[in-house]
Amino acid sequence: MPRKSPTTRNRKTATPNPLPDSALEMIAHRFRALSEPVRLRLLSTLMDGEKNVTQLVAAAGTGQANVSKHLSILKHAGMIATRRDGLNTLCSIADLSIHQLCEIMCAKLKTEHAERMRALG
Image (tube, rainbow, N blue to C red; front, side, top):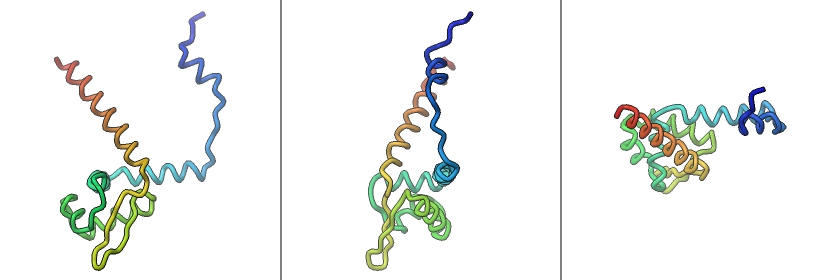
């Protein structure tokens, strides 16, 4: 009889704690908000600190209406916060877990890239 790997054994013995559909929908909503390169660029720009919409338009390389639409999606997903300062709207990261998520993904991509480069010689 073949031995099961520790990973397989742990999956069998761990009792799954299924999430309710409402929680899964909230998670999916968050990931959908991250599925657009312009939104990722906006979040990346905001990682350095609060920016006004004009700065974000320049960083995104697209029009103000498009940036405003993407900022609205990020705000609705709870990822950014906005505040008014006179005539300016300032944006910042509202959910610090965004930093962690980006660090995890960037580290993973860096590792995969290094593995591909080794494989290509």
